[in-house]
Image (cartoon, rainbow, N blue to C red; front, top):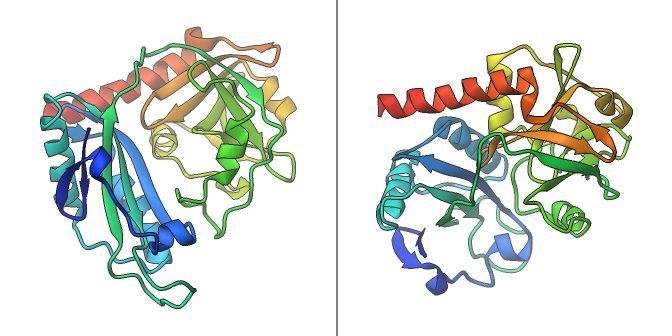
Length: 278
């Protein structure tokens, strides 16, 4: 498959990074995952802002503008028969001597990966389970989408597959946190709830979009409070809003939930409005 690295279009099998890259040596790197709709990325500016915040915190200087990177994304789709794609924009610190000496990273390794989108049927339900692995605490006040993914990988080992099921983390204090690859929402008596950012979760882009559409109560909640809900759904940038039907013996309304249906319809409308403006 076609990818792009540091200004060059390359086939995936030809990608090479230095073993001295501090993204490899110390896990110092950040990324965004998203998909295209037509020639555009939904909520592109929000993805860019989140990535830039992480880069600023860790003194990584991005040598390309986000306008240039969006042009690359469109070209990668064009090289793939014009089909929409699944993308990962990855920025690692770049090669440097062994040791924690740099005070800034001015030559990062920038890669845009593209692969075919997984099959997605809007409204297709998933089940969920509580994970034994606890959600770890972020290195800073607000979690970045970083190379520090061992906690997610450890949790993934508990799951036979993520295609039809999601794993739900609680944090060290026992409060509901997030999914392995998603943010969590639930509905009780018409009120929508989601864990606070202060539980250590990633501030998801789709999560943010949902919270701009409707009033959502953020807080610290126990698994029992979630299990008492009428509806539950999760959010990702790739699969949008996914209804949860079953959580370890607890049944929810799934894709028949009125709040889920209304929010997902609004989300899809926002995508179509973006496409209409392009």
